[in-house]
Image (cartoon, rainbow, N blue to C red; front, side, top):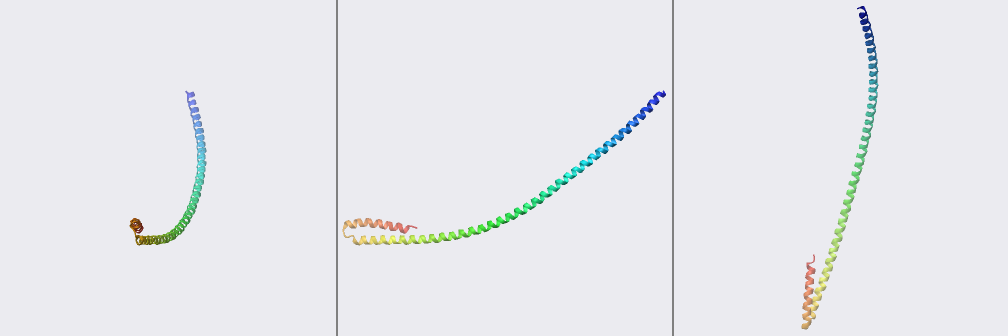
Length: 158
């Protein structure tokens, strides 16, 4: 069976050649794949670096915006404090003015009520003095009662 040994040797040689070619191709493919992974890793690192730089820029902008907003809030608080002081002063002045006017009005009303009361008292006295006959006395009593009631109401007026 030399023929079969020869065939086996050729098969073995051919299989060795195929395995060597397979190993060589696999090594080339793994090298190519490793190169692709390296390039992918490099591109991803560049993209992550770009994203990180954008995030840093945004953070710097937000920090600047926060500083600007805080300054504006401080200005608004100062303006509100000033406005509050001005409004309080105006209300105090208005309150003083209204109190003065009300006091003056109360005094004037009191003086006028006293004058009306004095006139009614004078009228009552004149009617009592001039009532000589019974008819005049009768009507004078009623008028005196009305005048006295009006005087009492005026005195009770606050």
